[in-house]
Amino acid sequence: MKRHEAREKAMQTLFQLDSTEMSPEEAMTHIVGEERDSFYSELVNGTFENRAAIDESLRTKLENWTLDRLPKVERTVLRMAVYELNYMEGTPAKVVLNEAIELCKTFGDETSGRFVNGVLSKYTKE
Image 1 (cartoon, one colour):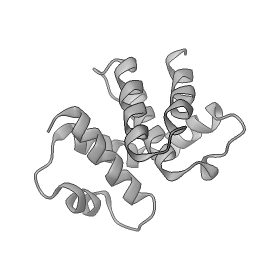
Image 2 (image 1 turned 180 degrees about the vertical axis):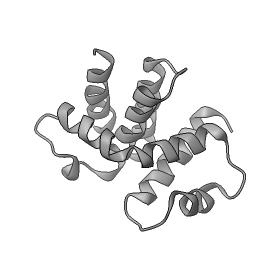
Image 3 (image 1 turned 60 degrees about the horizontal axis):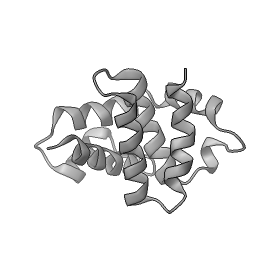
């Protein structure tokens, strides 16, 4: 599985976890079955396990928004991208931002990409 596809599948899995009582294991099985890419698994498990810290970090970056008011697609993409930026090594920040914007174009609306880019750019300036 290529990284872009892994991010798409991770986004779908995390989106599902945001509205159900499934475990990450159940959600991953539902989305990709038993064969899993390690990058995908790390994105899902890491984002899910660190969600409280990620959400707290996001709250400091959001202007005129609360995390609960964000559309689910944007919230999910932001959580996943913040996890990748702050907890994983090896992927340049520019790539993480570009991938997040692409996910928003695929799953969100026409303004999602600009919004997510604005929030995530605050992480790259630190």
